[in-house]
Length: 163
Image 1 (spheres, rainbow, N blue to C red):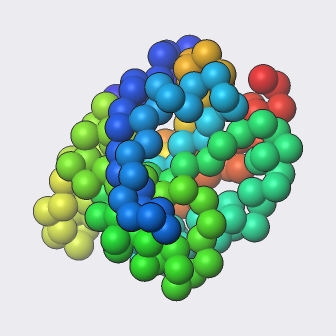
Image 2: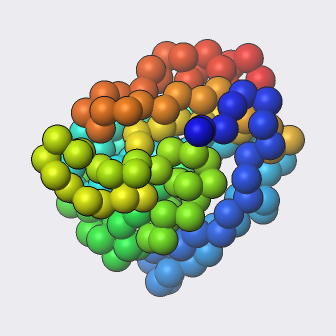
């Protein structure tokens, strides 16, 4: 079950790829600096995920104006994420949840990804959005069961405006 509004956001440390090589991002180190928008996406290089994160890239100034830092999280390795970001022009920080531990901690991991296609890939993140305030408390949650569905970003922005 996904975390709920009012829950403390579980801490994590994930890898991102920077110009200087891999680096670690620890959620606890980001708390208090700005509000945080965590966007879980199923897989790099897929249509829905590319559409979502390219749209967010185009709106980063809006999120910055709302005092929010945006992170994209998927189970892809950081090198695949970097190649995807370069190919598609994605400019937000992508975090690799390669072991799917964070998706599980946030309650957004599929038991079986796309069972109608007989795919056995458990642990893949459901497309999800979490707004976390400067105290580390979750203030907005949206978890989508179908990977082609997109979060309601107007609701996300409204949650950020309310902080």
